[in-house]
Length: 373
Image (cartoon, rainbow, N blue to C red):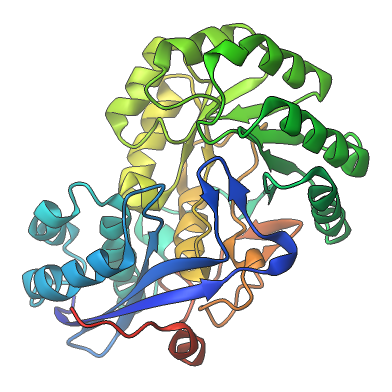
């Protein structure tokens, strides 16, 4: 195996498609921020990774991540064998302890390089794919009912099979929004994501809303600290409650199972700190009787490729909660050369060595932000 020769860091800002702009209880945005990592080995092989930055949600901002990568992480891992994740993870632990997306980005780049060096894809490196096609759902924002109605029509016309609506700002507005979406999608699977926006005082209204619109799953209805309240809501409905903001570590998975606060956990490599850590959490969740689904911070094609490999490797996936493998569909332009394996109708495991994607350097240059760190 080849040693790490150089780490290159790029801070980028990518515009979202205006026709389906996001809005949740955490806020809205027109652009998404990422740090793209290129790790070059002594053999000239380059592995790519992504830090999905969303300071208001995961606390990881782009400038800080880029600074840590350039000043601390790059010197610490240069000279280490790119496939020696134990030594690499130990070397970066003090700077990524509270930055799982940063840790995941470094792991992605290392796995991508290792796969290219060995002529294997990441799923093969980590034990072999259990599946190569993934059911997905499309996400609609917490915007005005008529606006979301139009967005739902676009998503349905492009082949969407399951739909998740962002809620949590106001119960009455949530109900109006869901009425418009049901009017478009008919009996198609409908899920909601409150992003911690609802409150236990609204429990009766929430249960009625779930029943009236035949909601298949409810993602993170209450703030993450409200464990007992979530357990009470789960006991009040047949709909599946899914943890997202409540589950970051394996200890969180165990706590959720013990408290019976959720029946499904939303896991993804960025939030869990890498594909390996995500698989560990998924294995524990499955063994404890919890369903596992893939969540998202709307990754580019690079981060999405890592997510696809997690889906391919996970011991079991929830049949009721399709994956959020959709990021590239929502951007004006992606950073990967080819994202055709992600469609409105579902997604497949990208083929090729490593992660199975390559950086579009022209696009990278167009979206790069110049910084001095």
